[in-house]
Image (tube, rainbow, N blue to C red; front, side, top):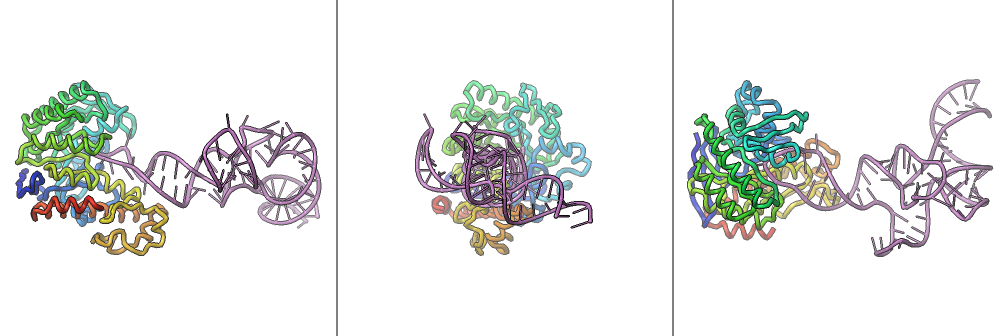
Amino acid sequence: MFDFKLLCKYENARCGLITTAHGKIQTPAFMPVGTQATVKTLSPEEITKTGSEILLCNTYHLYLRPGQKLIEKMGGLHKFMNWQGPILTDSGGFQVFSLKGLTKITDDGVMFQSHLDGSSHFLTPEDSIDIQQSLGGDVMMCFDEPPPYPSVNEHLKKSLERTTKWEERCKKVKTNENQALFGITQGGTDQRLREESTRQIVEIGFDGYAIGGLSVGESTSLMLEMTEISASLLPEKKPRYLMGVGTPEDILEAVKRGVDMFDCVMPTRNARNGSLFTSHGRINIKNAAHVDDQRPLDENCQCYTCKNFSRAYLRHLFMSGEMLGLRLNTIHNLTYYQQLMVMIRESIQNKNFSGFAEEFGKI
RNA sequence: GGAGAGGUUCCCGAGUGGUCAAAGGGAACAGACUGUAAAUCUGUCGGCUUAUGCCUUCGGAGGUUCAAAUCCUCCCCUCUCCA
């Protein structure tokens, strides 16, 4: 079961509602990344309290450990990790990109060397879907090949053609009606190839469409340009997902161009590295300036962290390497992101999106 | 009282004549992080300053030498063992 309703629009920005077997998702939505069936440091209850409605988990990582069979035996990913809300599983395609050096790509699939023990694994688009069906996520992603930036057009073209074929194969072997399957558009940073990829993927036909291969080193303006090209060619009635993006500013700009879904490690990873988002800009909690600061991180934030702890204490926890610091920081950053999404959705509904975006840009 | 070991830049600790402002950790300070090989990584870390420069610094004071953290003399202090 999967449904997307477009509720309202403000210029190209959209507000919608996705319905899955495990619940509804208001869009534009931000999905925290829970690679290994956990959003690092948080319990499912804490994740829910940040306002998150859907999580992203990773096929490649879960395939290597604890393994497809085990998760299947434990009743699927939702039950295994005790997250009752919707889950999107990434295909492992990104690992083709990020584990470069440990992979070898052929038309049939990708040879991976496990980053855990060095063992070799061959993953095909069919395998990826098979694993994702075992995991039981509400949204599955096609197995794709995001080319690095920069790449010569010749390589982009070849990679694009391969990705399109892989996605056809993904669609072909998908059998579970309860799980949606999203296609992913590629094409690097070449305008013509972006268009070509988008047309091909739409032609195959999916439940939703992702814009992939961006935010891999190119400039923000180029990333947004490519996003705009893809988004403009995607069907109005299907959700659009910009993979791996991004900063709060990136998200706002992408929503402006018609994107509905996002995921990014930024709020969670930055939290663990002491970089925190506030309504007055980013702050680095390590900085000596916060050593005796009694104020909360963000007086405008209603999260557990801001309601209960001072910057001085958060700095102390971080400097001492205490786990609680990582958790409190993660709770805050995710809440910040989800609050941003709430404000984006409200401003679209209230027809005040551009005003909001402009105000936000001043931070 | 006797025997032995040792005092190095904020801390630990390497360094036994020049290539030493002094390895390596840690701490501290700052920065990065975009479908998570990330509680990670990078830079700075005596001063002046930016030069193949000068000054200060290896417990203290002298000395040997063209040259000393490194060798010699005396002194101060720590630790271990034996009385």
